[in-house]
Amino acid sequence: MELRSSRWYSGNDRNSYIHRAWMRRGLPREAFEGDRPHIAIANTASDLTPCNSHLDEVARSVANGVWAAGGVPLNLPVVSLGETNVRPTAMLWRNLAAMAAEELLRANPVDGAVLLGGCDKTIPSLLMAAASVDLPALVVPGGPMLTGHFRGAPLGCGTDVWRLSEEVRAGTLSREAFLESESSMIRSRGHCNTMGTASTMACVAEALGMTLPGTAGTPAPDSRLLERAHESGRLAVELVSRGRRPSHVMTRGSFLNAIVTLAAVGGSTNAVVHLLAIAGRLGVELTLDDFDRTGSGVPLLVDLQPAGRHLMDDLHRAGGLAAVLKEVEDLLDPTAIAVTGRPLVEHLAGAEIHDGDVIRRRSDPLLPDAGIAVLRGNLAPGGAVIKPAAASPELLRHRGRAVVFDSVEDVHARLDSPDLDVDETSVLVLRGCGPKGYPGMPEVGNLPLPAKLLEKGVRDMVRVSDARMSGTAYGTVVLHTAPEAAAGGPLARVRTGDPIVLDVAARRLDVDVPDAELAARPPVTTGHARPARGWERLYVEHVTQADRGADLDFLIGSGGDHVGRESH
Ligand code: FES
Ligand code: MG
Image (cartoon, rainbow, N blue to C red):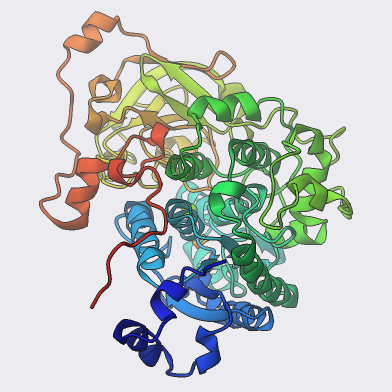
């Protein structure tokens, strides 16, 4: 079999000389002989992505595994997105990171890749890139951090920030105590330890078959992560020799397995957008309705924040993802393979639950039906999503008067005003926060509750927006409404006082205003960004709506790994 990298390195002409000579900074001549696969380690380590800052150590273990299996490891720094730092939202840059990684993998003399991610957007962008270039690849998730404690109680990353800051606003926690908890939240290296987006996407990557089975959820400081990284490096070399590509692993069956997993672990709504985008790159048919259909009836088995109590370290100790999947094995596609070449379900054989408090048995679930619900109606013709597991059951069927905000700035200006005409039955509507509108579809959909209601003890209200929410957040929050207001969706025509009707069981989201009247209203677009140049402009002109994964229209599909022309 001819290695892709040999198209650069083999032969005795001027060009192969150039390719080899510069790479011999540290690489021996044998690195270019004898069919040694060259494996890129796509590395999102960055000091500005604190959740991924330990990945250089993980990369060294991967590199040792690649050498041990006869390959040549090559560290490839790629665009890294730190969820907490990057403005206006890391999601604006996900497609840029995916595009850059795809092009770097294609442009360089590599035969395969190990993808090192962790923080929210890093695994999705790398999977999108790997899908489009379709070189043999697997993911090593960087793993969650260990549980921090404050005043004896465990702290869940993200989730407890939302909770504690609402306690401060409600007057039940002092600002001093709140600030004291800050130094306790991030106990170690690793990504958020709740079942937020990072943990969800690690589990989803494993369910897709794209990790060495048993790796997802291994805490970042755990020695076993480095062992798995070493083995993953070895496996990358094998993937090349077998010609096993992402398009062989990530089939429709794998995506349905990922949807079952998402429900069983109580994962983040963000996974919906990311999975749609990855599937789009592969040409796998996947729609919003697949999430509802396949996820419905899947029990919630994992008692983790934000929907439950425990944290990722507890999940790992309790048996990890394999123990969860073992309980729902009959719902998984038995033919969908992992990167090992064997069906994912075969890897569940020895899995056991060691703590039934963290991972519940199928016969005793936290919720019988944990799937993400897809809503449609005159307010969301293209669909909207809600995670019933993180919502208040009594609000899942609700009619209330809309209180409309045109932007997050509008929320900040008016939400806490004593004059705001709002009560606990109101529905908070936020628009201008979709992919085009913000731009980048930020995690602001779980907008805070008005101060005067918090003081009354109200802790949840129905909220509707075209935004996303953090995977660490909770509440009766309708998200990803499509089309968004900035794309001419009906959300732009809703007015304060309109009755909004949510009926999750019926999968409906409507505004009770006659269609003709709604259509006759001028759309409100005051809160929308109109970027003049650069990536933001390209993004706004080409981003698809949430129901198609918010990818750029010209990035959908696969370009393969071929490059026709020499550089010299
Ligand atoms: Fe990086 Fe949560 S901020 S995973
Ligand atoms: Mg997040």
